[in-house]
Amino acid sequence: MKELLSNYITEHHLISENDKVLVAVSGGVDSMTLLALLHQYIDQKSQIGVAHCNFTLRGGQSDAEQALVERTCKALGIECHSIRFETKKECQLTGESTQMAARRLRYNFFEELCQEYGYTRVAIAHHSDDSIETFFINLIRGTGIRGLTGINISRQRIIRPLLFASRLDIEHYALEHSIEYMTDSSNLSDDYLRNRLRHEIIPRIYSSTSIFGRTMSGNIERLSAAQRFIDSQIERIASEVIVDDTLDLTALEKYGEKDFLLFELLRPYGFSAEVVEDIVLATHTGKQFYSSTHIATLDRGKLLIRERSKDIFEERIIMEDDPAVEFIDPCSLMTLQTESNVALLSADSLQFPLRLRKWQSGDWFIPLGMHSQKKVSDFLIDVKVSLPDKEQQGVLVSGKTIVWLVGRRIDDRYKLTESTLRAVRITL
Image 1 (tube, rainbow, N blue to C red):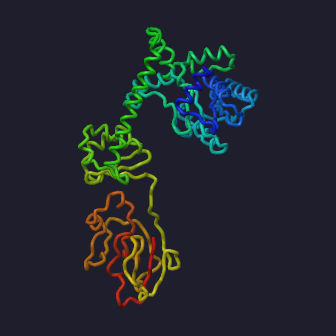
Image 2 (cartoon, one colour):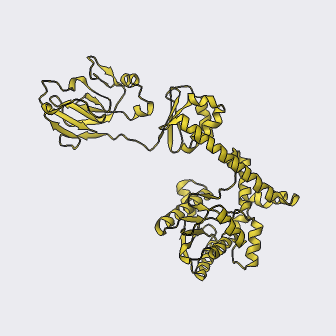
Image 3 (cartoon, rainbow, N blue to C red):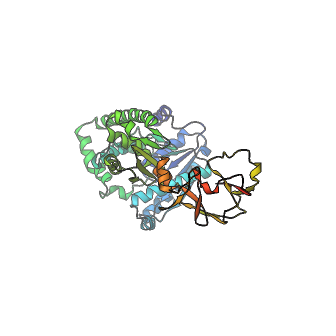
C-alpha cells in the first residue's frame, strides 16, 4: 500500500517537496489509515498537520473520536487542530440539512487553517468505492457526464491520495498494521442513499463479478476523459460567443445542441438546468433570470450577465466642497472634451447641494445639442444602452432639473457658453 500510495501521488502530482499538508481525520478507518501512510510518506513532521471536526452529533462517540485523533497525533508528533461545532443549532439557524451544514463547516475550517498555518494541500481520505457510490448516486438523481466522473483526484488545495484503493484494501492494511480507528455509527444506518448503496446494492454487484471494482474505475476514467474533452470544446466556444459577460445567443445557433451548450456555458455562473430551460424558451427582451450569484438579462439576441451583488451605483448628496466638485475659470478651458465620468457645467444656475440618484420613469432632460426635452428612457433606447446598464444609470439633479445623464450627456441648458461666468468640473 505504501508503494502504491507513493506512485499514485507522483503520477498525479499531488504533493511536492515544498507542500505543507493538512490531513482531514475523522477517526474512521479511511482517514486514520491515510494519516498513517502520509506520516511515513512525508519525512518532516513540520510539513504535516491534522484537522479534526467534532460535529457533536453522536454524544460520547463524537468525543471519543476526537480523543483518539488527538492521542494519535501526539504519539506521532504531529500538530492537531480540533474544533467543536454545534451542528444541530447551525442547521436550525440556516435551514440546511445536517450533511450540508457539516460539509460547509468542515471546509470553511480547512480554509481557515490553510490561511493561518500555511498549509498548501488538504488531504481527504476518499477511496475508489466512494467514487463508485458517487457515480450511482448521481445516476439515480439524474445527471450529465460530469456527474458520472466520480470524485476528483484533486481540485485547488484538495487532494485525494487514496482514490486508487478500495475500502477492503484500506481495512486490510489497517488490520495488518494495527491502526486504531473507530466506526461511525451513522455509517451503519440506511437512512441515507449512500449507505443503502454501500450496504445493499453495490455489495450484490460485487458478489456477481470479481472485476466490478476494476471495471467501474475504468468506466469512470473514460467518462472523465470524455468530460475533459467536452470542457476544452466548451472553453473554445465560450471564447467565441461570450465577450465581457455577454453571451451572443445568435452566434451559438451554428453549433447545434443549444440546450446542452447553453447549460455548459452558463454553469460557471451558477444557473440551474431548470433556469437554462426557461432561457432557451424565452423570447421577450428584458426578461431576467437568476442564479444564486448572477442575473442574466435577455436583450435583443444576447444574454447579458452580471453579478447579483454588483451594484456600482451609490446615491449621494454632493455639496459645493465635495472632492468631486472643482470650480474653474471658464476662460482657462482649452477644450470642452472630457472623459465619460467628467462633466463640465455652467455653475451660474446650479443649485447646491446636487443630488446623484438613479433615473426614474418619467425623467426628462434636454440633451446637449438639442432644443427640446427628451425622456431619459427614450434617450437610453436610442443610444442602445443594455438593460443591466440601464438599471445602474445615474442622473445628477440640481433642484428638480436633471443637469447630467451621468457618463452620457449633459443638459443643453447647463453647457458652457461665452457668457458663462463660473464653470464647474464634476468627476464621478
